[in-house]
Amino acid sequence: MQDIFAELTWRGLIHQTTDDDNLQAWLMAQSRTVYAGFDPTADSLHVGHLLPLTMLRRFQRAGHRPIAIVGGATGMIGDPSGKSKERNLLSREQLAANVEAIEQQMRGVLDFDSGETSALMVNNFDWMQKFSYLDFLRDVGKNFPINVMLAKDSVKGRLEKTDSGMSYTEFSYMLLQAFDFVYLNEHHGCELQIGGSDQWGNITAGIDLARRMRSVQLYGLTCPLLTKSDGTKMGKTESGAIWLSPERTSPYKFYQYWINIGDDDVSNCLRVFTDLPQDEVEALDKSRADEPHKRESQHRLAEELTKLVHGDAGLQRAQRATEIFFGKEIDQLSDAELGEIFEDVPSQELPRDRLSGEGLSILDAFHESGLAKSKGDARRAVQEKGAYVNNVRVEDFGRTLTQDDLISETSMVLRRGKKKYAILRFV
RNA sequence: GGGGGGUUUCCCGAGCGGUCAAAGGGGUCAGACUGUAAAUCUGAUGGCUAUUGCCUUCGCAGGUUCGAAUCCUGCACCCCCCA
Image (cartoon, rainbow, N blue to C red; front, side, top):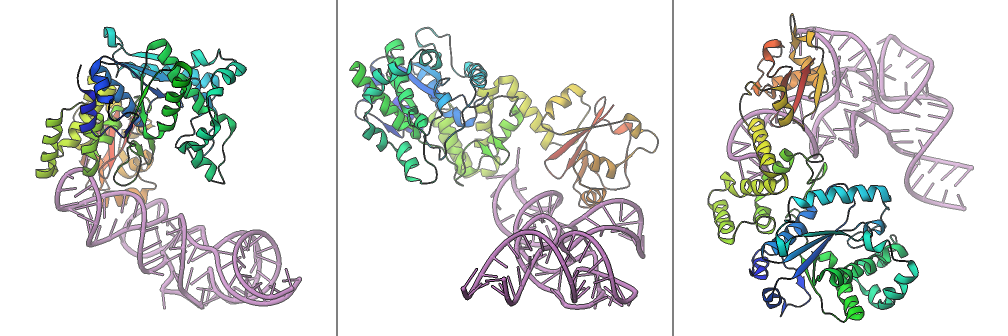
């Protein structure tokens, strides 16, 4: 049994526990069953879910048994915690599809075949759907004093805001999550619930309920909510969330997100997200202080996380694409390779005969690829030395493109500035 | 109901008969520097052509004039003040 508590402490992953004095010893005493919940609001998890997921993984590796619960039932209600507005309800079909997709993603992170400590995945819809409203009120609702519920931050905050309000439905969310804990305790021997610090109210509600219904003592542990030093949310970009599914966020983009984490945040990320041991994290801290330009921390972070989420093959793809995007001249590639590397890049199809004879004017090419909004803009790009074909700078705006410029069977790669690419495919 | 002010290019905001594609700032885009960072500096920023121009744009529709973003008329919307 490893000392998971000590590890979580140095990583800065403990925000609050329900029993600061005894939890560490309790976890060392024997293998425990731990759970965290995930709301199936989309068909993929995103970076925001990575923390609880890796938390479960840490517990599992330390010799405990993780349960991931996807909230097929709670997702139908919507957790008011940390939300300032009433949420839209998802359809049953949508939820079922989301639950299934999320289950698949979890399989890559948690070990579902390790004997005693095998991870378990459950869906609270399975037991909640059978509950009749009256039974629920009698068995569960009876144990919830309204005054306690009203005192919870998640409720209080909403009621204080005069413009937001809160429906009875969302108010009841807490009961469902609390009952999950009791159910998991009864059927799977689960004794510890983990979650973000915004889950404190829901977690303690579950502990209270278990005491009243089953006279057992359960535990809770929350992690700090992650924010970046500039105040923005971890895992969010201007163009939206960073997802864990390769369909929504390509491995390349995922990798790049971590490569671009600022120096101020990267140390925290290494501690919180990766499995790197303490001495290695500290070595990286030192490297960053001594030789910041090497950006070892960012590379290591991106590598570890891309491998965790997308596997070795995904990491290789991301790194290959990175080499090309930030490298020099592009050599011969196949259409297939090109498509894979540039999958995030917009492409335009043009008829092949545009390349014959005089060839295609570089200005038209940039205009039609979408990289320049007019031919004048394209001309400007060339004059500014910001136009590239296959990663070679275009010096002359009289240049034309011909068959010889194809880099694969059908395509060539245009670039504007440092990072903006477009593919032209000639068919 | 009465009086006054406004509507400008992605945004803010100058211009108030020709020298206006329209100052300045922001944003954006490039380049330099760098660590695929931050900061900084430089340039660009309606379209088509080219370097001589041509076309479209200053709320909308008309009009005056050789010539209008600039003057006049009507319309729409916005703001302020007095009832």
